Length: 245
Image 1 (cartoon, rainbow, N blue to C red):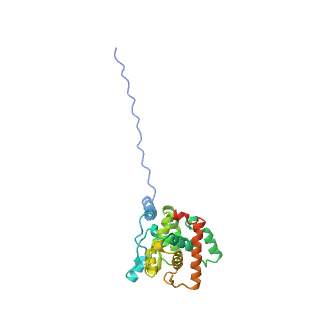
Image 2: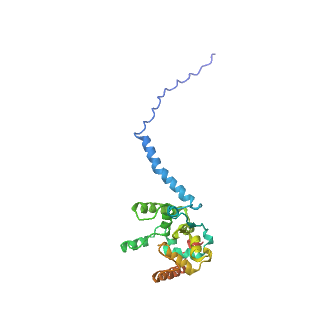
Image 3: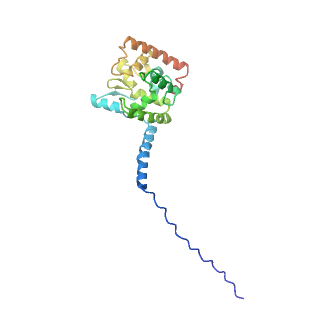
């Protein structure tokens, strides 16, 4: 008997799917995404890298170098700075540094109640301004500062923020950083600063070109005594723990 031959099923004819039409202006949309997200990613990378890499300069330091021809600045690890100096700067500039995420809402409310006659910038905000931005008052700078501060708080430890601040802060004309300041005013390294010397240096920070820690007015001497007391207080009540541990 002849074997039955299985019939092959005819192949179904499928219609080729037509490619989806691209939305109008699709190239423009891609470019707009890159224009927005490119700088954002670059900022994140730069801020994150400075958690480990010391900033080589700042806008203020560079401008002073151009104006004066030279500056006095040497980077110093925070381990080589007297703890009382670190506490004095925090007590003077931002006593609740360990208790906020970059913005001190209580200080902001107090500043608003006082009609903005007092400052409310935290140590984190000042560090961001000094590292990435420029001096002076403008809404543009304040907006950028407000955007960058949480990013710095995210990638940097509190101890790192204080370390960077101490190394880029201006203490006199052309004198930047605590190492240069300690030698400039007292002829000694920062590790040997006394509580009184540390408090006086901290008092200089809001107006470095107009104040001399060795020649303070009676009002500023009183302020320095308050800073010294505040440095002891934040050590005792635990508000220095986040940058000392």
